[in-house]
Length: 250
Ligand SMILES: NC(=O)c1ccc[n+]([C@@H]2O[C@H](COP(=O)([O-])OP(=O)(O)OC[C@H]3O[C@@H](n4cnc5c(N)ncnc54)[C@H](O)[C@@H]3O)[C@@H](O)[C@H]2O)c1
Image (cartoon, rainbow, N blue to C red; front, side, top):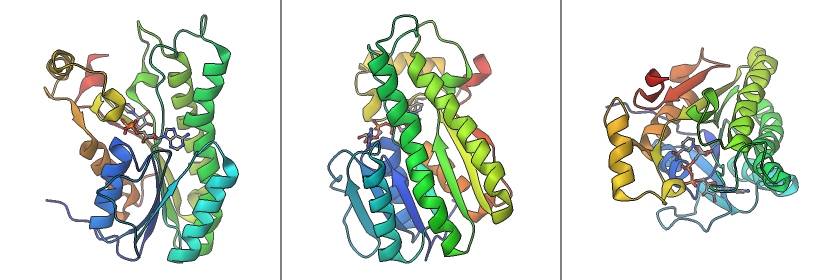
């Protein structure tokens, strides 16, 4: 059993009202960190606001809201050490081939999945610098952006691969200051995003994955805990695939 000690450290987690973001928020709190959780959704019942948790409900595409929430967390907690950019959308049925997509859908997906992450990085990095202990960021991509797909979701995959480029670029820019930036590429994972799956779908996906199970939100949160923690202090600019071996098939 791996135990992390994040006592006295402060994390910003987007998507804290969803599957993976909530799982990471719970793990960080259990490990002693203070957390600012951000999401459009209502605060999940399992999260109790207090000395070590603030939940900011709002839209990450609104840069002023993001900057306000992160600055308020810095004021409350006294520092910012980590950023987990987890919020994202997959607009099933609307996000199709770029040959056919409604460009308003394209722009919406880019705004949420890419530009929102730029908003959080721009707000968090100056505060990490002021906090004086380096920092670590993890941004969520997808294995889908590493391969082609017979059912294209082109805005989603293009935006996610742009997140990789963003992460590598800031990793390079900030490496000498001890501020790290890495990407996690989840495989198929059971979260509210995949609510549309029937029991048969779940079984078929599990059978297709080499490790014979669908991913859990906690699998992704565990990978993020490692990349945020000092256990990965010499790791920056990388991509970690967390997919039960699924990419071995491609
Ligand atoms: N579930 C999967 O199979 C899977 C696979 C690969 C990658 N991912 C990626 O992992 C990340 C987390 O996915 P998840 O499965 O936990 O999804 P989820 O839908 O459970 O959680 C995503 C959260 O992001 C929030 N969000 C969306 N737009 C927002 C906005 N504009 N402002 C604030 N919050 C917003 C949603 O409210 C939601 O709570 C996403 O970036 C997703 O693209 C998921």
